[in-house]
Length: 96
Length: 367
Image 1 (cartoon, one colour):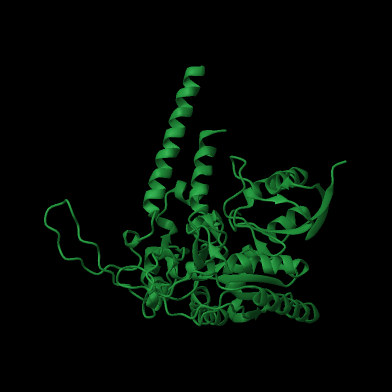
Image 2: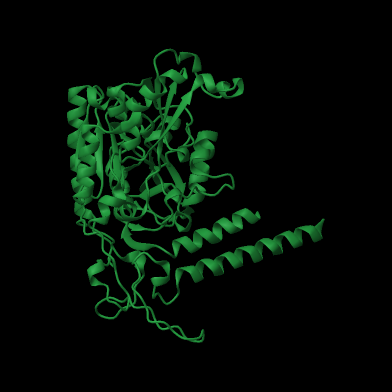
């Protein structure tokens, strides 16, 4: 059976507005790539959430600040989720 | 994979490998120009022009990141008038509309009202903005504006919580290793112990480099701050809760964090980004939006800046070599890195074009 770990997403600003909460926790298969986890999270929360995180080429937006347990992820595309943690994302300020 | 995605990936990889040691907050202060806000003065009739220009003169003269436009609505064609919202509101009284910088993609004015001495001074500056500027010039890593809700208990609790979280973050953070003070650079472009260095790792000013996070509380009702409070709305300031907004560099603000989202993860995450190595030196590829502040940063920072004078190596193979002159620290050509940045970017560009060409040829052949 696949091992799952709890991952907490902390939201502020625009993301909190879209989700309607400042925090949520979900079980995730051990070793899931961070990008894949964020893609799944975006699918759950709809188009606006997806637009905030991913560009038109479905790549993670460059100007996001993603931190894991309070540490800024310099290269989020290279990361996998290997232990329970709290992920916080600041979105760029733009658009009306 | 689509060609644009391949190029994006390559450019991203190049940037990641190119992180500099100067913290983001300091890199932004020394190297990122502020984006200009736009003040539009709308009036009706040429007879008003001179008096309006005199009233609006401080907007033009202020050392702020602000462009000013004058529009006589009577001079506009019907088509041009259609492009301006609520143009009918411009009556006998001239109007002032303040817009975020173009890069924000926000067209609607963030504030509009009558053009008068109060509105002009409120657009240009305000007491808390002066304090922010002063704190940044004193070396604060990031200043935090706590935009109050108006509920005294909530505001006090949010301030105490933010203070605790910032103290925790400060205790766990340090300036990245490898930051070089300009005084430590030799004429040969090495450190004093002879190590080669990247000029992007060199500080350009004498402003103290430290981890320090002051908090400035701001009431939404402060009469002198009404326009600034409106400016903060897009940073999460529309929330009914207290909101903590980090400001760094030359007044660049990040998305605000409402009191309900104040946590170790959010505050330490933001502080770690701001105090960490600047992984992407391109301003537009970093989060945030500039605030409107009344300071000519280039002139102000010039007074504290270092110029690293370096002897250039003698030219060979191109005729008579001239004696080398001094060079500014900012010159890309000054780098003595084993693999100069320009070379890396050029090779990356060639690789991207080659891949794109291969993809297009393969695609044509498959049709």
